Length: 253
Length: 151
Image 1 (cartoon, rainbow over the protein chains, first blue to last red):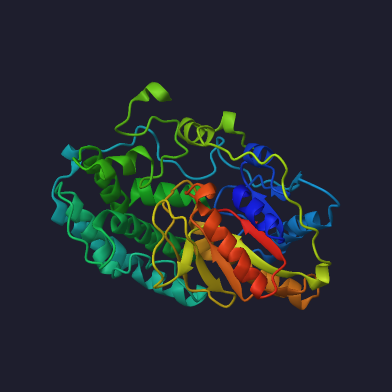
Image 2: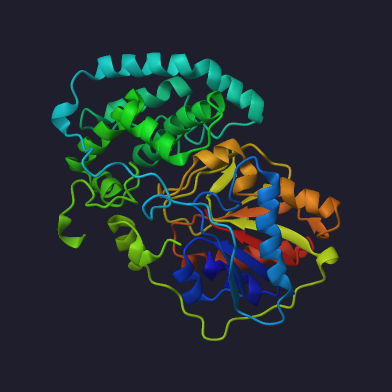
C-alpha cells in the first residue's frame, strides 16, 4: 500500500494513507501516513460507529495540511489487540489429521442442520444490513460445505465454476462458508468481537471442523498448491499463531 | 503498539521477510484546498462488485467500483485480517458514506464517482502499471486526492 502511494503521488495526485505496521511505513516513507494501532481489517476502527470513523478520516486528512513530508503520525487512540496479534489465530495445538476424517456424509448432515438453524438469522442480517458478503464463490449456500467435503477424499474435484479452477474456487468457498456463519452471529447476538467470532467458528462449529479436516488432507496431499495453502496460512487462520504451521518444520520459528 | 519484533512467530516470520521498496527522493504533490478536494479511495482489500472476475492470488490488476456500489465481495487470499468488521459495515474499510457526509458538510469538495481495489497480498512493484492506469482515470474525472486504506 505504501508503494502504491508513491506511484499516485508521482502522478500529481496528493495521497494520504492509513496503515497498521509502523515499521513498514517508516521504511517506505509514503508522503503522508497515519499509523493506526488497530486490528487489521478495521481501517476506520469500528463498524457502525460513524463518529469514530470520521475521527480517523479527519486525522488522516489533517496531514494534507503539512507543508512538507514525508510525514508520519500516530492516531491517538488505540484499539487493543490480544497478545500482539491483529487477528484471530487458531491454537497451535488444534490440528486435526486425516485419521480424524471419519464419516463425511454424517459430518455434512451435521453441517446442514447447523446452517439450517442459522438461516433465519442470516436472512435477517442481510435484510438489516442491506447487503451480504457471502457469494464470492458464486456457489449456492447449500453447496458450499459439500464442495469442501469433496476434497476430503484426497482427490481434487472438477470446478463447477467456468474459468475458475477448483483450488482457487475452494479458497472462495471457505471464505463464503465462514462469512455465512459470522454475518449471522454478529447480527443475531449484536456482537463485534473478532476473537470470539474466530473461536466460535473455527473451534466450536461443525463447519469449522470440516475446514480443519480440509487442512489435514491438504498437508497430506500430492498437490503442491494444496500443501502451499497450509504452509502459507491461506486457509485456516494461523498467521498470528505462535507457530509452527501444521505440516512445516518448527525449525524456522 | 504491535511491533514486528513482538508479533507472534508466524506473522513475524512472514512480515520480516518482506522486501520493502526504498524510495530515495519521494515525490510530493501539493494538495488542493480542502473544499476543492475530489477524493477517491484506493483499497488493497481485493473487493469487487459481485459478478466481477475474482482477484488472482498475486494479482497485479485492479477493479473499479462506483461510489454508490454496496454489493461488494472480497476475494483476498490472505487470512490474517478480520472479515467480521466489513461484514457488519462496509464503511469500516471503505468509508464512502463518511466521505459523502463530509462532502455534504463542506469538509471536502466531493467524492469521486470511481474507487479502486487492489490485491494487498501482491507485491506493489508488480502493480505499478495498473496504478498508473488508475491515476490517469482518476485525473480524467477530476480527482486530486487519493485516500489509501489497507485491509
